[in-house]
Image (cartoon, rainbow over all chains, first blue to last red):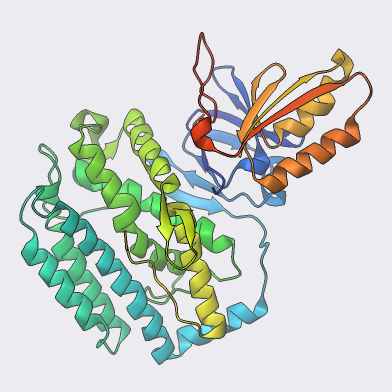
Amino acid sequence: MPKPNHHIFADGELSRNEGTLRIDTLDGDTEYLPVESVDSLYLHGQIDFNTRSLGLLNEHNVPLHVFGWKDYYRGSYLPKRGQVSGNTIVEQVRAYDNLERRLQIGHKIIEASIHNMRANLRYYDGRRGNFSSAVNELEELKQTVASTASIDDLRAVEGNARKAYYACFDDILRDPFTLQKREYNPPSNEANAAISFLNSMVYTTSVSAIRKTALDPTVGFVHEPGERRFTLSLDIADIFKPILADRVLFRLVNRQQLSISDFEDELKGSLLTESGRMTVLEAYEKTLDETIEHPRLNRKVSFKTLVQTDVYSLKKHVLTGEPYHATERWW
Amino acid sequence: MHVIVVYDVPADRTHVYRKLLRRRLEHLQQSVFFGELTEGQVTEMKNEIKNKLTPDDAIVVFESTNPAHFDYSLFGSSDEPGSRFT
């Protein structure tokens, strides 16, 4: 099993002590984190830290993801690259710059993404409503992906698929949760808020996975590389959002583990309360640990490893031309 | 694998083991550590323990590779072992 993540909700101080991480919370508690057994560290509270603690995280290759006010994703402190390979970067940028190769990778990513959305709808078809028309629409959109000849067209297909997909959320989610329209910045209602939060978690999971390879996170294939964002992580996150984020949300809402009172409305937007975030994160972490039999690896892998193998597969494709297997739900 | 390490060593030597165990395991109680490690981490840990050993020290490492054969119950004000939240 891969190493677990650790989330710090408490306010306090993060420091280095006896070769490991020490957290002094404002309540007066002191905790020690086994730095060698932590995959990624998430800071949700107000935490002071110094260069010595960052240095320690660096030594042990632990990425630090910082969430700011009301748990909006603020950024990541990434360890010094453990994996460096000029070759990989050159090949990655070449693949990006060559429209044919870029489209090939883009098709795989969007096909997988649509496939995973469709898998969710098929699961809930008949259980929470009739989604056969949306399932068919997604199926058709998946067919058209292969024939798109430009990245803009590809993104348009993806946009249509997401629209059809999100239109079903209202029926899947148990009342009083509603989702008429996907909105963010700020999320307009409870369902949107939960989706935004979970999506940012999937994004950070991808960032951590990409950091374990020599791939450059800023050069994505479907998303246009811009400034100040990891477009490759956005690409990878798109594949896994239906598997990791949406299913967790459906489960939490339909089993009434998450209720409207886990949200607070402020300044027109809606946000999760602290206890709501805990509930969501516990479910998310549990999902990352879930394992399934992997057909090509011939062993059981966790969903977290699945994100990792997807990135490895992309790297191998970029480097050697071996086919890229974007993760399509097979179970 | 799940690992539990307990030690019984002279008071002036506890820091030696505390330090090397805290890096990879959760400090559950005074001289009890718990966590999930890879085989490599366990070997490394055992080697480190061996190197630090003096005749008065007593350390026991419990291991279980099968999570199904591992369960626990909490009494009193104990913290949940393996919690990912602080």
